[in-house]
Structures are given as structure tokens and as C-alpha cells.
Image 1 (cartoon, one colour):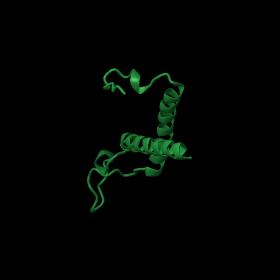
Image 2 (cartoon, rainbow, N blue to C red):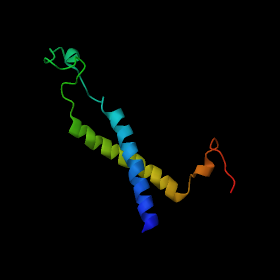
Image 3 (cartoon, one colour):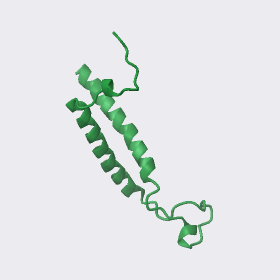
Image 4 (cartoon, rainbow, N blue to C red):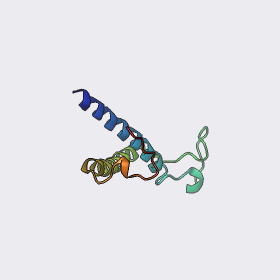
Length: 95
């Protein structure tokens, strides 16, 4: 169970980081500020604040995109097509 726990923790950590990176690329999709829409912004809101952020929809899109990217990366790593030894700019350490 020890090795499985470490592997599962690593997988979750990598997916968590990937999910946040994808979220920050998805957040601006489809946003429109009050100024861009030709409307007046509400008092106390930033002029650049989106009118309809649709954050739930963006969370779902982020989860799907992250799962696809992670699945491709995991498949490549698990199949042995590419390993860290295949990356030329990484330092090679001798045992």
C-alpha cells in the first residue's frame, strides 16, 4: 500500500497543478466587461469585472480539458514511449 499511496498522491498533486494552470487559461474565455457591452458598471464593481463570469461552466470545462491532457500525459509515460531519460536538456546523474 505504501507505493500505491505515494503514486496516488503524486498523481493527484500533478492533476491539481494542471487543473489550476488550465483554469487560468480558461477564465478569460467569453468574458465581456460592462464597458465592452456598452452598459454602465454597477457601483463598487471594477470597470473590468465581467458581467456574466459563468464560473461553474468554466470549472467543468477546466476539469474536462485537464482530464484529457492528464490522460494523454499519463498514457505516454505509462507506455514507456517517453521517459525523463529521453529529454536531452535534463542532467544525467550516474549512480
